[in-house]
Structure formats: structure tokens, C-alpha cells
Image 1 (tube, rainbow, N blue to C red):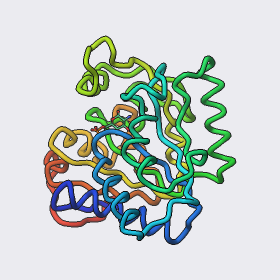
Image 2: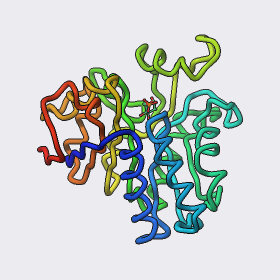
Image 3: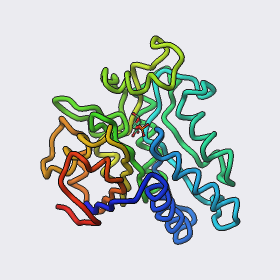
Length: 250
Ligand code: GLP
């Protein structure tokens, strides 16, 4: 895993958006694996700025998102559908029929997950997957536990994640308890992976990810099994480790 220690959140967002912009220029029909959460918001903002400056064309780009709450309607402002519309899809010239998220309204969640896997295969796989990291080391909604599930699946959210998500909802009882998420194999099948992490709240998850061990108690540690992962983080996110400067690990 390549680890780049960035100056601050702006720097993380800038470097991540540059990687994505370079890929779109090199392969205008690329398949981007996208993430939600507050971490990638700055990256999306910078991509929109590039588009507005006439420097990027999204017309051929296809996107697949990591996850969606379940059950939730796409119109719900807290759905990941709404989030993606707000931060990117409504702001650039992407074709909406080329953007995909798991179906949070599916009557049959298992069938929807199988369809999602099929759709990713039919797109030719993910060129670049963007990931944030949960405070407990989850990626997508692959939560710590005794085992991980390889492919897209319905999952119960951990108490830690429900509490972390509560800030986005008015009432605790509105916070979703389930989600549909790409599985660990789905994520690891992406040709390249970018992980973004900032702030002290991510420090223990980042330290576990970089500890050199692969363990289901920190799902992000499975990224060590992939050959092309880049982490852009700030010093706070590394503060549970002793490290400085750009460095190569593992
Ligand atoms: C959610 C998402 C993850 C995201 C995580 C961290 O659980 N499913 O994809 O990485 O939150 O969110 P934040 O970036 O807001 O800390």
C-alpha cells in the first residue's frame, strides 16, 4: 500500500481528485467505484470545479457506488442516491443511466445484490474504487466481525456505525440499521483502489489497516491483499502510528 501523508483535508481532496481526473482523461469510458460519507465530499467538489472549468468530460464515465442503506427510498435526502446526486451527478455532464447504486427499495434484497454483481461484471469491472474508512475499520459497509462476505450483500450495521451515522438524521429511530454493500471480493476486484482518511477519529482504524496484519476485526486491513492501493491521509489519521513523510508500506 502506498501511503501519502497530505498537508490537510484540502490536499487529500486535491490529490484524490487529480487521480480520478487523470483516469477520466486517459480512459473517458472508465468505471469509477464511488463512496459516500463526509470524507470524499471535498474530492467531489474539486471534480465539479474541474468540470465547470471545462477541464473534464464525464459523458462517457460509468459509476458504481459501494453501498446504500436498506430499506431507503432514493428520494430520501439521507439516501446515498440523494447524496451522489447532490455532490456530483447533478453538477457534471454524467449520463444518469450510467450511474449505479444498490437498490435500497428492492423487494428481494438478495436478488438485487446478485443483479448488482452481474451489472459490475457487464460494465467490465471497476477501474478505480474510492474508499473512505469507518471509525471501526469498515469499508463500504463491511463491518468488523468473525467473517466477511465476498460479494454484494445485505448487512446489519454495527452499533458504532449506526451511532456515527446518527449525525445525518433528525431522530435516532430514523437511522438505518441495514445496508446493501459491495463485499470484500467485489472491492478487491477493482483494478486500483484509493483510500481517503482524515482526522483523529480514523487514527485507530488506519493504524489497524497499516499494522501489517489481515484481520476481519479491521475489514480495511484486507486492502493489504491488493497490489495497487493508495492511501491519502493527514497526520491526524496517522496519529496512532509512528510515521512521517510519504512512505511505502508492505
Ligand atoms: C459510511 C460509508 C462508508 C464510509 C464511512 C465513513 O459508513 N458506508 O463508505 O467510508 O461511512 O464516513 P465518513 O467519511 O463520513 O467518516
